[in-house]
Image (cartoon, rainbow, N blue to C red):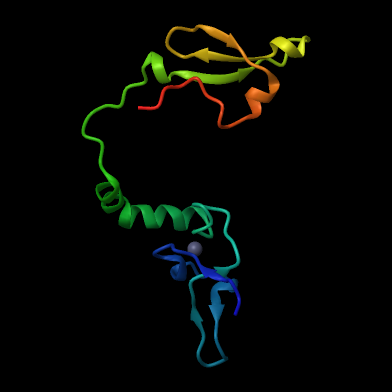
Amino acid sequence: MSNLKFCQGTACHTYCTQDRLRGTKDNKTFQTRRRSSFYYGKSNFCSLNCQNDWWETHGDNAVDHFGRLTKPKHLTEDNAWVKDYDWRVDDRQNAYFYVNKITKERRPLTEEQYRNDNYTLNQTN
Ligand SMILES: [Zn+2]
């Protein structure tokens, strides 16, 4: 069978476009879009409208299900390191660096460290 999947938009079938009109001559209906992949919402929605419709219907329940924030998160010195790159630096050796968003401290990086997603200065809690 095909790997086609349906748009998860709650109202996809109510948008009356020609590509949604399916069925035989006397039995036509507007149907939810079906594709091998979609561009929106991690390939779950055919359009931003459909993604927004889903969120309008299920958003509160989804946030409650996965854990609603009840207090602020904190970015601390220990986990405020971000990789950055200065394209104006001619010397490739010094173009890559870590910068701490809180202290503004900079630490040099090699290009390899910069491109390695597993390389981090942040402490995991
Ligand atoms: Zn849709």
